[in-house]
Image (tube, rainbow, N blue to C red; front, side, top):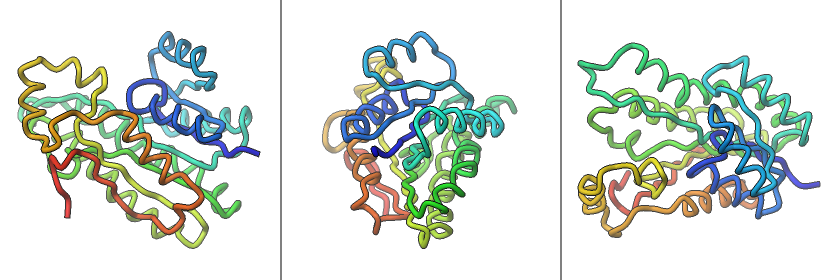
Length: 241
């Protein structure tokens, strides 16, 4: 029977590319989304991928959502923690709400999603967890103390959990994308976008499919010796040692 993959934020942008890549690899994919029901319905109709709505920043919603996915498709073998938001602002102007919203969705979600699933993976002796961080979690970014802190936390979470579950056949890895050609980046003013591309040695934005390819590789049965790793995918814009 095909393995089940759950992708948070899996109906748009990088998440949609990941969902499609895993579907094309033969996984039964569940794509989580938080708000845009119309876009999720269109995605499901176009791809045949089932979608499930919940807020990854809320533990109880995650537990219920995961139970719904497993009731529909079976136990989750592959978890991709992709969902994320930004609420940018300089720290001296940032509100507590801006801070809390980003930490909840971008960092608390690591616990909220992994904790309800980890015992099942341990019992079955197999699991693949791939967490999506960011170049800005590695180098920091002005105006994104909340986002940079959360995404740096994702990397630390990955390293710690990888050590906890390594002997149980579960791998936990992280991908830190740079600037990817998604709707969010496309909305940036043209001159700003040009200045960003000028700092990327390969001379272009990344493609969502390139991040999805990294996820497919890490999710594969043959990637069992890779765990606790962070794959930096940013066109050499920032080279992490």
